[in-house]
Length: 199
Image (tube, rainbow, N blue to C red; front, side, top):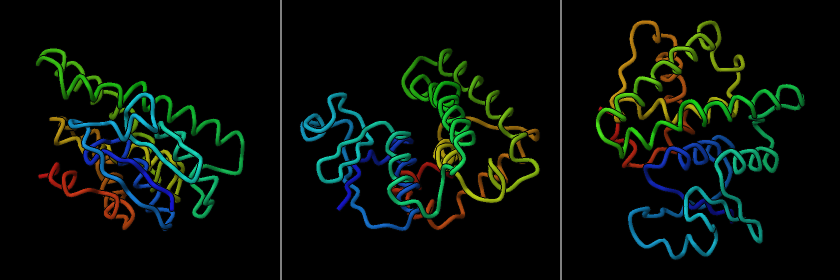
């Protein structure tokens, strides 16, 4: 059986759990204590970070690589696209999410107040720009969920936890987030520790 080594509050692990549940397939989640002994993790991932996917002799790490493999291995529902141009645009957007959104999480979590406040503001500004993408459609690429939605949902879930308050200009983004949060796959993918992040 496919195994996902996952952090219970790690947004990248949450991203992979969401995709696995969206595919409605059998898999096992192995919770990894990122603050404890990581010897088991070190044996399968030289970087000792989660998520890590193990299937037979295949070991993958990095959330985007894992999710793209899952999508190709279990193509229904398709979260990328058959069109190579759209797939390339999705990959570029995923790269931008990591470089412009998720890159600020460490600063918010672990750094002194001024640096954390600056990171919150940068994250907030980038989210306001994304809000325009979901003003007139259900999901980022239209009426069907895609890999972009699976990638950003864990971040949107954690906004209160990170101390980020969005204004009226982001109402479409918040309505979009609630659509994602109400999906059975998202609910199933959320750990008890993650559920506790939202007030």
